Length: 110
Image (cartoon, rainbow, N blue to C red):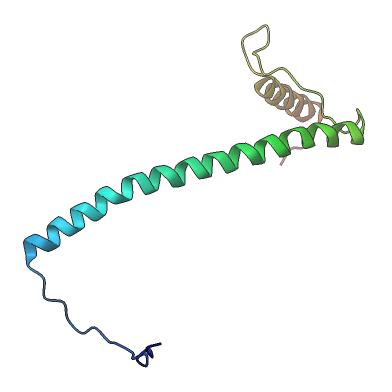
């Protein structure tokens, strides 16, 4: 058998390439990246769906294990009869409560 020549390290210092050839090469490179990005996108979506399929039922199982007290009751987010949100109603109640406390305090003269 023929012996292999010993390996040598190579350092590239300069590349002589015509400008038009470099442009064509870079356009081909960009076009070749499109299918690669599509493949990566499909792989990422597939992994996300698998993770969702595994983890979504797990949250339901954990909620059942914790019991009904661990699950917070859902409060309706629809506006109340007067057309305001529950948060706004609580602010109005708090404000009127503060005003009632201030009016109940004895006033001191300065």
